[in-house]
Length: 136
Image 1 (tube, rainbow, N blue to C red):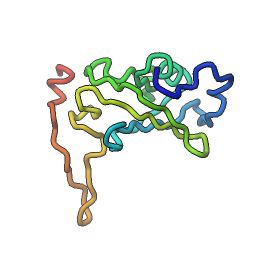
Image 2: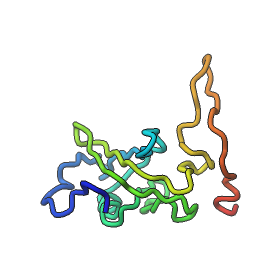
Image 3: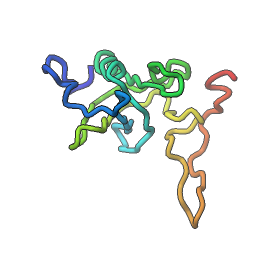
Image 4: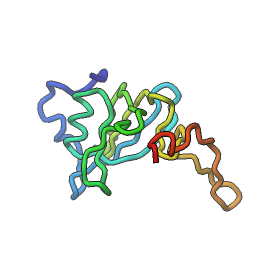
């Protein structure tokens, strides 16, 4: 269980402002470095499972199902802290990224494109080929 998890606090989930689709944006941040690793969506079940297991669970809009981060890649996210922003409509997960890869492209972070001189430049190396991660 992550520290400060709102277990036993009645109505803790009702403090969250959900979209009309029943989702809330979730940002995964490396608890050690502060680097933003990825963005995903959570529904109530994903957040409840994240709190219960101490590992990040998201909601895949494209697959319309829960997605336990690392279920295929092995790159799970151990949740160290969960925060809710001032408006109650964004979740911040401070995590330990197992394997050092958060992005399905094999990079540390999904935010590997940097705006330089009017164009996007890829600044982070691929740490592991997606073919090697997912066996495609």
